[in-house]
Image 1 (tube, rainbow, N blue to C red):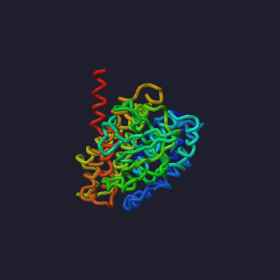
Image 2: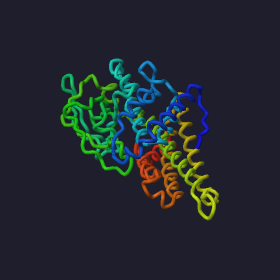
Image 3: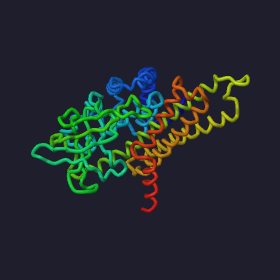
Image 4: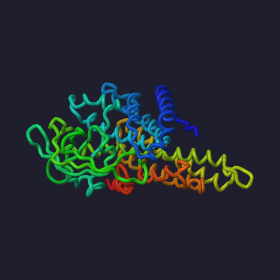
Length: 379
């Protein structure tokens, strides 16, 4: 199904045409096989990076494409409609580049061309086994010893664990609470950095997720991003943008499920005609299409606020909440359109349904998004 898009420049139309071509060529034919084998498509990420698709919202001086966020999110949506694990990897990597790009020193920013070009892959280490939503209570500690920090603790639910080349490690360098947290850009192959066995996940099986143990790991002191105590502020700013990335992934997944359900309903014959001509099923598809369009509009409205330099945190929370709930509803209904066929792995809607669930959890659960929105009313 063709999505009618309004973009700010002719260059943006050409860019999204390139993204669509690459998604059809590099992603769609491989998704089912990689998901079945649980293999991470590292070379696909390199290909996207070399094509300039990992640095879309970042400045050209650092190797990015300097595209508006609304364009980047629509590129992410297209990727997600073909293979969610790759789109999520792009979103996580983009999130992982943020601390260095926005708060790094000029020396640290020399890493950005390789980061944005896909030669180096990033991960974002904020959550812990006992501290997910309550990020300010994290316990991973970093102690300054001469020219290094000694880092001890465990991070949990880390996308790209064991495959990343660098980790943004949010750790406690000071006292309790948000003010005691700092951010270190840690080389992933350093001594004392020990990724654990990959989690056995419901969906996104080609995306490695695991705990990472820091056992007296030494991180050079010049890898401190910002000042000591800036970490929580950096983490929350990154998550505002990251939530828009997850919202775009959700829109793309829902669009992919809708497209497949429509195509199936046109071909499937019952009682002498295509099932899409039955009003009950046609109304279901109409509701799915409307929900996807509404989620897209809400996500892009928040992106345009970000592009204009205006506050967008609450709108990002709304977009993440609505888009990911929409993805769960639409993928559920796509399975229903296919009936029994939707419950078997021969059709991708079975995989879409399993994948949608995680989007309601990552980058802040949807219950946390509701808290963020509700608290804004009292300010």
